[in-house]
Length: 587
Image (cartoon, rainbow, N blue to C red; front, side, top):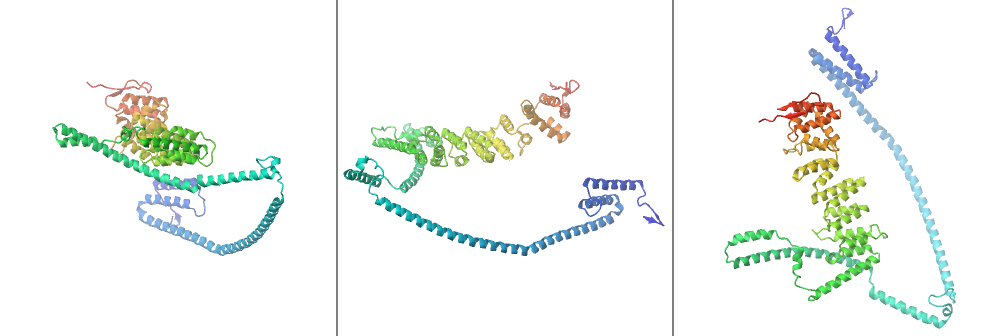
């Protein structure tokens, strides 16, 4: 500033000059780091000077209202300029689009005219080609007619007639006799076609009717089981009442009924109950049994014919719907599996597997052996949709083997890994393999659902948690295992799991967990060590020794310091190598 014709410094005190010097250095360093231009408008330059202005406002408290108002005016003006620039850019874009519109319309019109001309050319060429095709067809017909007339004019056969010698071919009597034989064979074939063969549509209609009948059979089978259960329960109550009446009615009836009703409610229908109605009947006494045996033999014979004729789809459907399941077994599946030459997209063994799942009655999935082998064959040929149908519709008997097969296929084909893990999770959960079900959830990224599943199942053990960690080593998952969830204690403590992992091939995972906790602060790390009730002092000492051996001296020192803060703990020898801790035994 100038006073009385000479320049006076604006800031006279040392603190003011120091502030101005630091402010200039701040502006200079920020410009260098941001690589801002020295001249011209720049967004980063504006941000730097705005920040410097804020520092001046904070420093000059006496002029803070005035400087704040000035800065607000500058900010409003800059924001107004930016808004105008944005509107100008938007207007320029609209203007360019409006200027380009007539040019685009002219181009489209010219292109439409070109396409119309090409269409006309194509139509003319098409008409010429049709005329040429018609002319060639007429020439071909004339040539065929001339050849036919030439064949009719020839009276002597040019070659030997099948079934006749050359001399007989020239003998009229032999030819007449041969003609009679041929006409007789022709009539036999026509009669055979009329009496023994039917159109293909008849077979299709019969297949549809058979499916309807099979569905009705399944429904009647379910209803029959209900009636058998009711009959069994009523019979049991009748016998109980008879015994009660014969015993002189010594006990109260209500007490008897309550105990018997509890027993009756737990009854189920078994295979022996279904056979009980036929136990006193033999095949010699019941002609129906003989007919049934004959029908089964005819059914098997029909399957053999279809299979030998190469009609594998019909044979598979025929076998899947066999009465009493005589053809729904592993031997038939192996028979289909042995076929290597076939027509169609699906291999014969998958046709049989699909037919088995479709024809399976409600509530009665395929046996475990058939289920496992069918899933193995379907995954081998890449038909995951068959496995998806069987698992989602409960047509298979779930087993750990099926879940393992699906998981292995997902590992081999990364495109289907999520689908395979979801299917494997369903299978593992249904057959009670909790550890693999939780691992499948974690691999799909459903860690929260996996933790809820683990906490919900009380049968989940520490070994199961270790299995999940081995299958998916993750520090985040390990932290979840050591954190309480919804007022429920944690599955394991930090010291316990770290001591366990350090004695396995996952020691790096334990070190990562300790380093994460240690990064949260000395207080959090010390609290973790002191509040660990599941890990003894000796175990923590071993952890500290392992940290020292791997050059993690900070971890080792903090663990030792936290242990020394416990009541009754002391250092027996100086140095980290000889640091051993013990607890006093209070008498």
